[in-house]
Image (tube, rainbow, N blue to C red; front, side, top):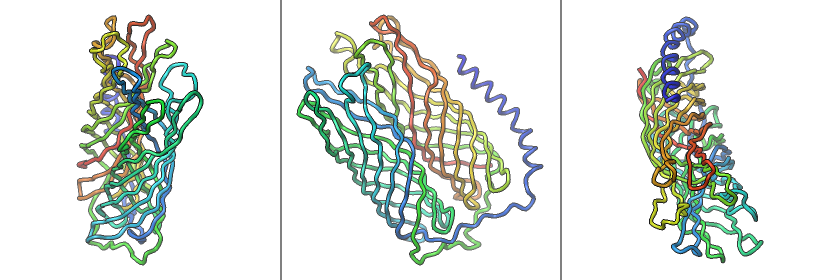
Length: 434
C-alpha cells in the first residue's frame, strides 16, 4: 500500500509540475532551431564496433546423483564488454543485409549456496557469435535491425575433488538493435541479444550445465569508407518534433534473478533465474531544451510474468510444488535525457523510481509465508528512438530494474527469508507523439 500511495503522489506531483515547466520551456525555446542533417558517411561496408552493457546470465544445473534427477536454474547479473567486426550492404532502397562476428566478455562466477566451500559452482567466461542481419534504414544513417545465428560460450566447472574443467558450449543467438550515425564514419548502437546452448556442458561428476543469457549493450561503431554516401534529399525529411506529450506500446523480452536470502549454512540462496516475454505501455512529455538536447518525464507499466523454481523444494514431500516466487508487473516513474542525432532520431538515457510486483508462493513456504508486495526499487536504461512519420516513432530500449527492499517471508526454518528480484529487459517500442 505504501508503494501504491507513493506512486500516486509522484504521479500527481508530476502532473502538477508539467504545465508550469512546459510554459517555462516554451518561453526559453529558440525561435529558429537548427535542423540537424544526417552525416554524409557510408551506411554500408566494413565496420568495427566496441560495446558494453549489462547481462543476465543463467545456467541450468542438473545433478544426476539425485533421485529423482534435480535441475536448478541459477542466475548471475553481470557487466559485459566486447567488440564486433561486420559488413553491411543495401538489399533494396531501404533494406539492409549484413553479417557480423562478435565477442562478449563476462567472466562471471555462479555461487548459489550460502557459505559455499570449494569455490564457484560454475563460471561463464565469454561468448563468440556469428550472425546474419536484416535491417531497415529509416533515415540515411539510422537503421533498426534483427540478427540471428550461432554462438559459443566459454565455460568452466569443478570436477573431482579440486580440479576444474574448461570447454565451450555451442548454441543459437538472436536479437534486435538500432544504429544511428553521429558523424561521417562513427555510429552509436543499442543492441539486445539472447543466447541458449544446444546441449549442456557435462563433467565426469554426473553434472550438466546448460548456459543461456540476455545481454543489452550500447556501442560505438566505426564504418570504413566504401565509396557510398548518405542519400538524403529534401524529400527525405519528416516534419517531426520531439517536444510534447506521447503515448507508447512495447514488446519485451526479459530475464530476472531472485535472491532468496536465508542464514542457514549451505542453503540455496541463488540467485534463481527466470525469463519471459511481455507487453507494456508508457506516457511521457518531452521538452527541446536547446542545443539539440531533449529532456523528458516518463511513466511506464510493463507486464512480463516470470516464475522461479526451486527443484529441491525444501520439503520432504516429493510431490510438492517447486514454484516459490513470481514476478509480473513493473511500474516506473522518472525522466530521460537525450541528444538529437538528426532531425528525427534521439539517443537517450533514463533513470526512474520503480516498483516490482513480487509474490511468494504460499504453497511453497510454510507457516503462512506466502503473499505479495510491491517492492520499491530503481530503474536505469538507455535507448534509441527514430521517427517513421510526422507523429510516430519506433525504437529499441534496454532497462535494468532492481529492488531496493525485500519481500520477507517464513519457511520451515526459524530464520526469516528475504526475496529480492532484479530484471533486465529489452524492448521494441512504438510511440505516438501529439
